[in-house]
Length: 71
Length: 268
Image (tube, rainbow over all chains, first blue to last red; front, side, top):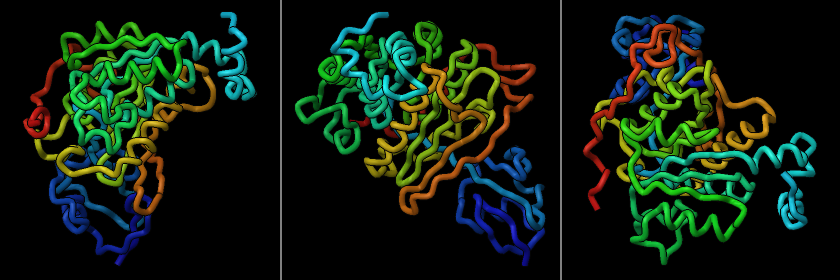
């Protein structure tokens, strides 16, 4: 097991793991709902499967959020 | 600008602030802010900016007040149901602070009117709930070099970022609208009403900070919070040199109306 920082919190996972698998493990069913930063750099959606997370990586899931008025 | 005695009394708690003072209050009173969407976010933004004495407040919204809005859209009251949201908002602002000039636009923001409307204002607040319009606001503000505050809420979560020319824009973070219906809106997934106030007041504070020049704006940082844990985070984000609209070689040079999610828009 290795430790990564996921959304600012320590998280134990088996590495290496692809971003797509990390999303699945965190019950994010639709990758199109999320924008992902790894160590402060955005990863484009088509690279979610090929990007492998290494120990100590900092991963942030940034979710689309609407809200407000249907203007 | 010479303040009357009443105005000095009204704005005394701003004037007392060392960073604001009479000079800062003058900047607020000369300020022009456009609020896009008079809903959950736009309501607290409009009330706080009106209370603060922002000289001109523009409000654009094509909708009418629905009973289901009142749980969070605190500028609208029970007798306002079926009234246009911009008119309802204007009436409350006028009662709260007659110093404020209110300009209403009872229409939707589109690729064809966005630049024309935005150009009249110093700062823009995005209080909309759908992604096509959020991207339109971002692109129009970047193109017109107008600063703006993005805000989003869903269920128990909120997020906001302030974008000024030269800082990371909404498109740097989210690239392109999600496929229609991939992401639920508040009217599909629900939202804790008070979340709208938490997020909207942050947006109002950013607008006042921008007008007065006080403090550091929420730029290059996405603020997110979850009300269940009441944890707040700011995530550093960077401007993308390859961003389609604010990058070094923008490929998006004209505004486009994205396909509107068929979801909630007008199913009442």
